[in-house]
Length: 430
Image (tube, rainbow, N blue to C red):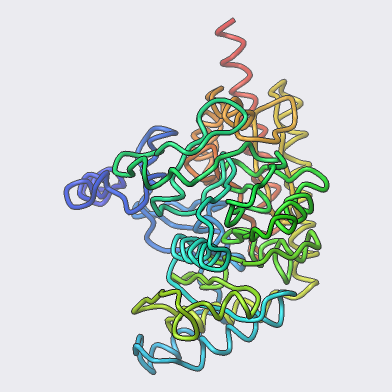
């Protein structure tokens, strides 16, 4: 019996006394799925361990920041060696230069890279560069995509085919989002000469994984080029998750600017804005667009990210995609045979899950699936089986190279058991 003072509940209660809601990021609070979050003590490979000593098969993987699994031996060794040299200097360092060179080498169309500390900063800076380059104000985004928490991008579309944004949270003024135009995902916008840029997740991985329709991303590129607007790919999740060169390589489409994060930090806070030379040299000190950050390009984060990227060759993605396909097929078959409608969208190694009997192509359809409440049931039933999904229905499932065939089989078996219980409960309600 775990002593109460060492339980997840005790630790979470303690957290609420010193942190708003007891967490550093809202979804971690379990608000949308109920219950008390498990408090992670450590992780290794495909697993995390909580303060009570319980082990969970982890598909959160820091929301995609881990692609090798937790505490990869080579990454740990490299960062330990880097730590001994110092943690931050406020000066250029070798690791950030080497990581920038690796990104340029991997991503066709990228000439220069500017490191920041978060995806929010990367997208915020990309929009600033786009406005400076075009001398325009308007920004087009798509409903259901998440581009960080800067004021101008925290807008919601409301009703209708499109609308200028209204604030989606208190603390953001209408003025901050008045130049933000929100459209349904997979809708080709008619862009006028007032639009500075179109910002898009090439795969919408912040609403449960919604795939772009065939030809849609190319249509966005052509629409932007027609009026001189810039296309910005928010690849904070898809960057180096889908392929060696990220989503732009996977789909064969080059935007004007890229935003990377998660994987490039190897488990540490690191993100980047990248793009063509003429656009990137608008940034200070080369140009007039100001951006700065004390911890930008942190050498420990850059060392970890570089070590991760060294392991991500073409074979790595072939193998990880095979694992994802195996999990997708097992989940759809196991859950479906219990009479529970389910869709498991897949793009390369990236998976989502919707409790829907039709494909999900936009945020309205994603919301309809999430509003059924089935994800909440599914999440909690799997958690009892010690299989951890993200505690929110609008998140992806993140596989790593550490997930074994045995782990995938265990997940499929647990999902089948959960679906059986869900079907039994629904039958009783009738």
